[in-house]
Length: 300
Image (cartoon, rainbow, N blue to C red):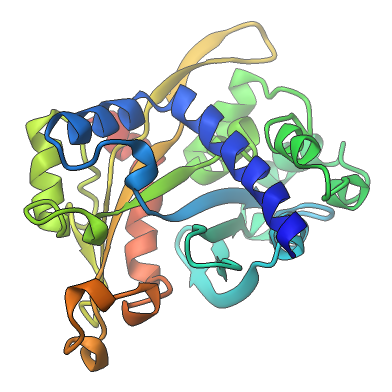
């Protein structure tokens, strides 16, 4: 298992390196935290979870992508259903607590219109077999390259636009593929005055970080144990197959506060560990977080 964890480190490092390059808000937030002496280095931040988007078609989707992380010791946990957005999702618990949880969602392509299904399949039909089955999962650099490589040809702007009109999730995924959708700062592990979601959001607003306000800036689970917020996706200049370049949504940053479970509130702060806090996810929260890449947020 130790060898697999070393490989996992390579994969996660590759994901985060490219993610930070295409999401300038990461550097801005980390820089502000360092300047305000909340942290001295990015390594002091706990990454609560990372997320991927997939298309539910033969040879792809959750069933394919999860194989990578199951190989490294992740365990599949709860299932989530998003009726309006036509999505399914699972989260995966890491092999050790210092690794991020993983959240993988999947578009139920068969629930879209026949026109949208036809557009998506015109790209994904190029994938004739499960690409993960041909991947050497014991080669971290190969996995890193795979997660940042095209599985189908570059979409045209007209196809992207048509998909976006029906499912912005579909359009995002047909262009961005497995690029990391977001990483998540665990705010509860920061110093006082920054360690609640409300305090952290105030810090972000002071530094002109734009936040997703769908369903309110703070998304709170019914049990009050999980509170989340997120930035609005960074806009990237995307090159399409027809030679056009257009600004589209890239990735964003999320923030999570996991409160201590009632049965552990008697523990002194120094003894609080991950298992003492609210775990898992909340569908209603995630439903609104998805909209961080939607035009209703990015065009405000």
